[in-house]
Amino acid sequence: MDYANAKKGIRRIFIGEILALISIITAVIAMIHMFVKGRPLNSAASFVSANTSSGGLFFLSSAIALAAFILTIVGISNASKDETNFKNAMAALFVSIIANIAQSAVTGRGALVEGLFIFVGTFCEFLVTYYVVSGTLNLARAVHDRDVQVTGLATLKLILIFYAVILVLDVLATVLSAKQAFAAGTIVNFLAVIVSLVAGLIYFRLLNQARQML
Image 1: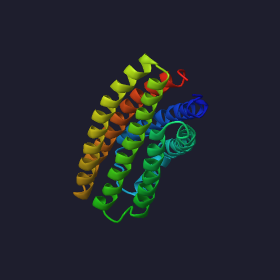
Image 2: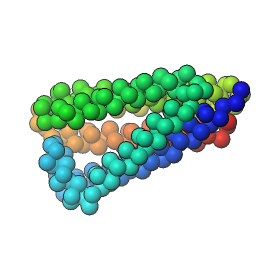
Image 3: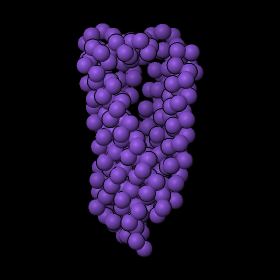
Image 4: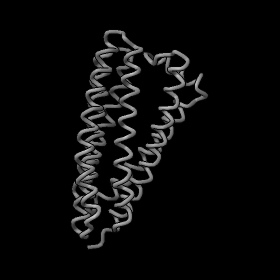
């Protein structure tokens, strides 16, 4: 079978992941700058202030993340024509979009409500990653690529662990924000970003291998 769609899709997801990692690194730099300035990110107003004082790094991170998101959508759509798990990833991606829109709509209306949508969005992000990895594994089995199979299985296990940690950190950050412990909440959010970066690097390694197998 010709897996031309999957090949094109995985390459686009790979490029999207490069941009996503750049976005996370930019966000980490911006958050470190925020810590140095002593400005905990606890409201839309403080976000604007932190973005201004960091030379626009928060805005830059968001812009790069948007570009990564669009490439990922296109890539998953391409790959879904050859592998069913990418269709599942697309469904999870759309739920993630709805959760992010809902989160924006309830910003400032209570940390618990906002935290709920953050949790849902993160969980959907995990599902997207899980299904992309699973789909990649199925393709590796189909073309008998043993190396990608081994990396894919290891990636699945590590992704489960790292996203479990991220979800726990999301819950903790929400509780701290609800108690108005904004400085502590910001630190927890920072840790979640660092864990996301590590998970992204693991995911990136698999995509880098997989884009060459088809």
